Length: 280
Image 1 (tube, helix red, strand yellow):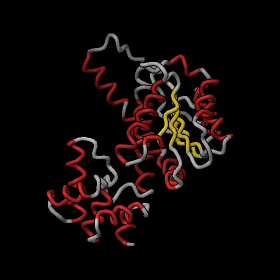
Image 2 (cartoon, helix red, strand yellow; image 1 turned 135 degrees about the vertical axis):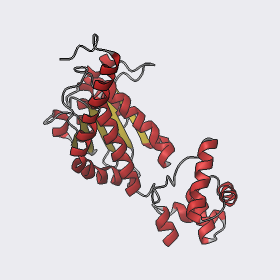
Image 3 (tube, helix red, strand yellow; image 1 turned 180 degrees about the horizontal axis):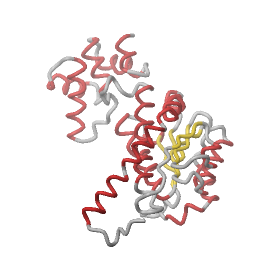
Image 4 (cartoon, helix red, strand yellow; image 1 turned 90 degrees about the horizontal axis):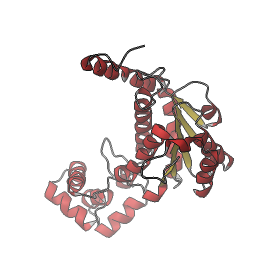
């Protein structure tokens, strides 16, 4: 036991930072399970299904953040990225809602999850009632479930299609899953979604080919991506993006294949990846 309330601030800071090393080690140990989960998520994307994330408390907040970040990064339609979060009808997520099994089932049923979709269920303990209820409802509907937990042999892992067990053990602040457990969950979620979306064709090399150019910074990034792939100037890339309605893939096809913008957009849309469109 460490008296965090009495120890000097530099010592407490060092303990808390050192405690995060557990998260990376746990994620590394779980890498085979993460790799096994990648095709489950990839296949849902390729089927045109939805990616639903569920959780409560810290796990719910991280699940919601993952769902929110995918459309802008990978160009997925926002309606394909769902967050089924305990207590999320309040401005600040209500932690008491994690025991509400009825709401967990109701949210999953209201989402009308089916075999084409996938549910990523996040729970540090692997036994959160809300999350278990949502995952059970999803499995009953034929939806693949990926569990992300921080303990071994949990009920959530047992019902999942694939279970990622990033076991982090005791926290520096005992019982606070927002520390190493939360960090491990974020590592797992980022790794899983990025690998799956790359495999589904939403990445070209190491470039975010489907980034949504929603602001000036992202418009410059999109132009840089087009310029790099098409081996052209930023000005030419910007003009191609404008001609192709901001569609980064189409702009590359337009420049590399020499197709009119409308034909470039059609060709880009007809293939799951830019690489496939360029090689068609």
